Image 1: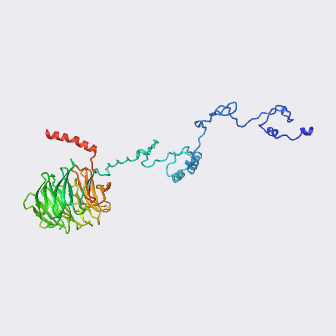
Image 2 (image 1 turned 30 degrees about the vertical axis):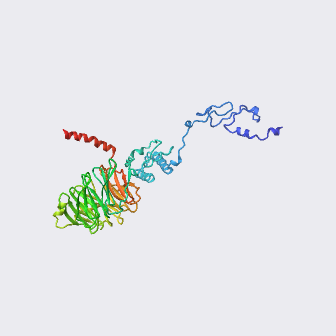
Length: 496
């Protein structure tokens, strides 16, 4: 029994005998549980109620989860922390606190250099711990549908205003049977009275755009055919060049032929008016100037080209005449009075940059000395010329045969008609020569272009024997409304 009482103490008794863990209320150390009073003291007391935790039921289960907002700590984002920079900053701050008086100017300069090498910027405002990642920078022109407050969006440039809508399909299509597939001819023209003249083989038809009525003006006899058409500026008379070497002058209001103008030895494939002067070009390379007021109408004859004169255009003010030939040459001529005074029939300028026939010619309506010219299949270029100085301003390779050119009266744009191999119309922005629209639909090359008197519609005539009307240059409604409001005030001033 004594051996049992003197047996080694249990582990819990040994633990309780350690200082601070056991307090004996009596001097009895016999080891029985009944003779001792144990008072345990924990070095860390647990509060009776933890903040943010819900009370317990009798069964000991929680009535709800802790709210995230009641978190008692912040966890830094390790991915957003620069540990090297923060280590240096902590050491720097400790040195400044402990040895502020001992650090001389040289040591401060070294620390500044180290700071710049580490970050490349001022670190005085940087935090050692980062608890939230920065918002990502938005992409350029990013449309923020979630309305995230990106201040970077305020500095973005405004989006460019979209270009006007140009219909990709023609407004109207008319059949033109027997329209000759000949690159060198000029078979359509639209006058100021809204009447369209079209040459179909040996016949000429008039289409009245206001009513849609069609009338036949003339029909040549035998194997003759019509080669060119040109209205007078007032839209009353129509000049008709034929394959029989003559030019016929018609009064379309009376449907009557007025006279026949001769002077050529081969077909007349190009015509152009300058007030009362009618200039005509033929396959022989000659240009004849006709004064329709005189009985002896041929006032001047010029050997302009070595081959057919397929392009002929007077400038709007009558100062220059441009002639293009199948010899790949473009000539610029002075007005008639200057040509008559010159001792020799030499042009003002001769341009030989084109590598094919020069048929497409167009004078700019807002710059009198600016001429656009287009070359055939071997050239495919549109070139712009300053006819005052005789310099080439620009050249654009269109990748397709250039058959005709027209300047817009409403916008600073130019439209070109193409043959091999794309058979399309292209609207270009001048002077950048960016494509505004590509109009397709013709199944064969587009040989001729002409414009309505209001400048809104372009008519194209193709070798597929169709006439197509394109609404290319419809005026801006806001601008048109402003102009219409200004007209009455001008009239009122005149009446007063």
